[in-house]
Length: 82
Length: 422
Image 1 (cartoon, each protein chain N blue to C red):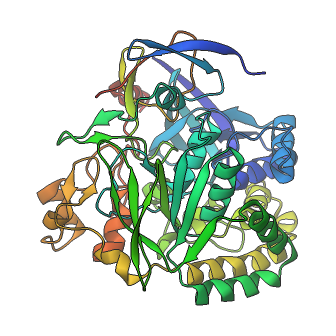
Image 2: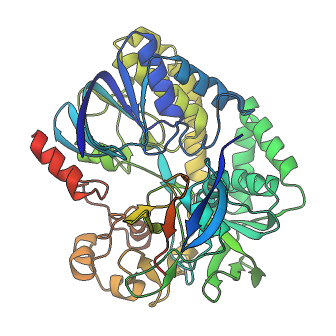
Image 3: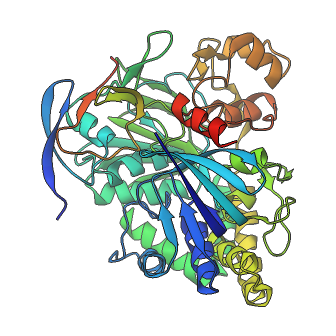
């Protein structure tokens, strides 16, 4: 069984397992907008495999992390750019 | 920032089926082999989330072979530049890494082709493979209404996967017409394995409307997708949904090959009988040489792996398998050719380049890809044209220019580490 723990998405606790990506955790929290585009449009993930850069969020203070490529870790702090 | 160095007889880039097969075959011949992948675990997109204990038989057996071999798995790690022949630089969570090699095998796979239509930038409009990857990485989809649209055999596999996870798949909209799909089905019938896969899928997809000659014209919603407008030659209607999973078959990932100077033929990496590219000692296997699916990728991977390890005779044993699988590849291309109507989906206000928010109306006025880049910044954002490049090629016939380093955006520290290493 994968290990279970919680992460925070924009400050709110979300229960996840270690095999989940940060992106899955964000969507599980009910957030659908990951970032605002250069003209201010809401955007969500597109390609799901690290190529489109639409799923960029801030993880543990580091900006521009591709949330679809990063696995959840205990106490991870995830912030969307909305 | 560490700057570790590794050196290999054979370095494989990409740990999907082709890369795993190549690495295992080269290692079996005693070569010191490393395999790099930008995902945390080997398997590529098609075997994402599968393990050695998976009930997907070929995934389990190849992953067992890989883990049981002496191949060094370098993941997650992303190659971004080649400072000189025989040396690549990559980034990983631990910092920059320098990889030296005698032989290189590129197995960089393919990505989905996305085409712009009004509303395609709304949240919850995703790639078909993209949504599948998300569900494989832990997102619940149970009870959600999903429309699967676009083109290619991937749509069926995605719909089956989503349904198995409890999604309410409303419609599968395949843009290719029935006439071509029927011919494709007959071609499949001459091949045992593929046809049994097709029957299995059909069973999993019972009672889902599969519409051929049907395409998306728009997605609508407030802050996220709420419905999608579908069209056939006879009618246009709205289908409510929570997610639209939409991809138009696949395009090869040739950025690295192109950076290394490998010659392309049409959009694919040109290789000889032993999968060697125009750059001596650099091989290429799987989707970058032509979209042909799992079995062809494995056959090409085995040939490349043995050939790179100097075992050309052993490589030759897979020539027959490759030849027969390539027929499937040709049939795929013919069947899922994109219909002309798709060129007329975007309106003047439809965004084509999602990184820089460049609209169709502005691009339409440009004479070339180069002019578009200079005048509008189309393709100049973080994805470096990976998404809009294939779209503008289809819309305007503009060919992508050669790749430039870094082929992925990297942290300044990684670039600095490369500079220091030089």
